[in-house]
Image (cartoon, helix red, strand yellow):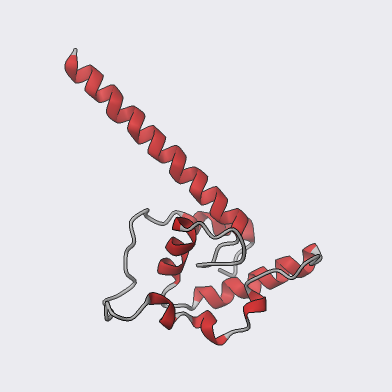
Length: 124
């Protein structure tokens, strides 16, 4: 995720169902394999009153860690399903996750409307 943050939203279109990155022991929680477990937590969560330039730099560094993580998809889905209100999770900031969630809600509404319209058409 070395791209500018606005283009990182394009990779955020993760399917709503969890897709494992690879086969792994089901008894081992996904987060035990997270690369961020070896990094300082401060990289992923903003200190209070952090200047904008420092925040953007820190978030990009956190996204670089996420980009090499074998459980990035699982982490992202966890953050979207909880939803986690702070920090970088699965390569997305809190603001980016809000955008993904809004897109998912919009898509779900469109699918419901389409299904309803097809039921009405079939009944006619």
